[in-house]
Length: 182
Image (tube, rainbow, N blue to C red; front, top):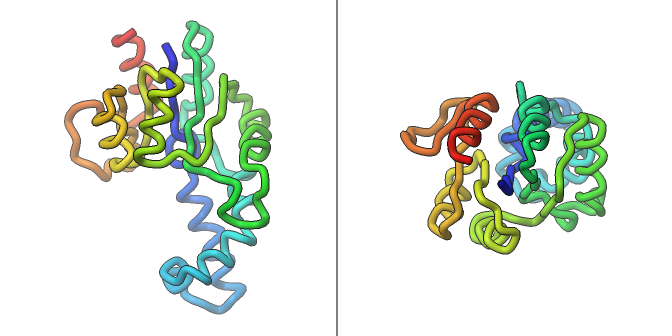
């Protein structure tokens, strides 16, 4: 089975590290964090300084490493399909290289990394790479992927959404779902 998995807030805890670095930056700049996020120039300045640090130091979600290892050991192919892209800020020129480094440092083996995929583009990537099932934390991506005919699980370990089908709250649930639906 070919499994596509979003990276940020699915495999790793991106929101948490962004909030941490945003508080640090806001303190340094003597600003309110919300003012930074709500202003495109200030937000871009923040990410220009911190994005590579965020990508390299983000924590892995609970059970993700072990579940991914077990899924690969059972013959599944794992593809990271992420919205990360190299042209967002000048400080991040090779998002694939940075992502590979982070995956290697966290002992996560994948069969490929596909970047710059969001919404319809992510749905197209699933079709082009013959992804059997995609796991994503974004309801917009979920809707686009499902409407294109690819199975998708909405990963929500913060219980933000009210979805009854194809909804998982942990990596162990992801593993059970995939094993039941092989």
